Image (cartoon, rainbow, N blue to C red; front, side):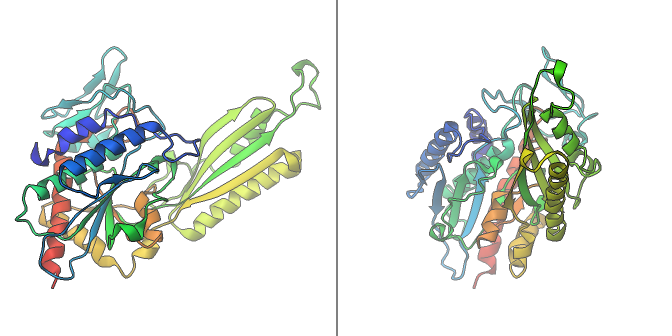
Length: 412
């Protein structure tokens, strides 16, 4: 296959790298270390002598520049190794649907799992392409193993085509992106990159350089359990209290009812028995003032419940996760502009979207390494209906190479 990205990807998905939400270790799961070591060996085999795996499973390496031009920037390319928590990534069984005909794809006949354009309209634009799918019992892991395969595929191409001029290429593969670690242990200064790009999710042409402001919240409720036969005036059912709290949130401001720049509250977990309950929330908004207002609403909602049922029965913890990178892009527009120029020269129509999530790049940008995102090709990520058009992978490799080419052309 062109640039060998597909073969690499099909190998990477055999590693179970699903991250764990409640682990305090980094990486949160051992499979990420296994993939990290494998990737470092691949990079060493390509001649990148400084390829290494850190104590936290970060993979870093550099491909030295080969141009004689001055002022060519060192450009980083970043992807994450872990897969989402919603569905297992163990024992992934990928297969390729050649020349997709536009109809239903039976992923698992025995379990009646079908990938259908009737439910997923994004399949309509994939007619005639080759799609990598699963057997319907796992996610695929193209988010973000496709990004890893594309970056190494581009490096492979450069190594075997030394006539192509390029500046220094900085590579970083990170753990635990899906659980909000956000490349916290990546040494930006040591990496030597002047700026970077993440390749993370998204169909052909998707570009993101603004994202949600994000926070997570946990509400713990202390109920009072007694025998239900003699509970009148005594029992405080934590299940019911949690339902009452959740009912205070506007039903029109959830992930399922919003799009674009619209923010939301998301109750992603509700574990409860009569005596105690724990509710977990995500708070998201692109606008920083609206974001602060959403956090304030949650505080008021919990305060109202405390006033009604007792101060000590509700504990609220809010943790900021990441911030909108758009605030930091100003003054560095050439990084985005060159990415868009690369796509247009390749005949790819850029589709600029407000990212309804976060990337490692958002956190890196706030730490000083400007890092917008462009597509890795994953569609329907975080679930059993995830698929990856092979041609999207190939085009992502092309974009990497074109960005490097353009910065050489622009240099003195």
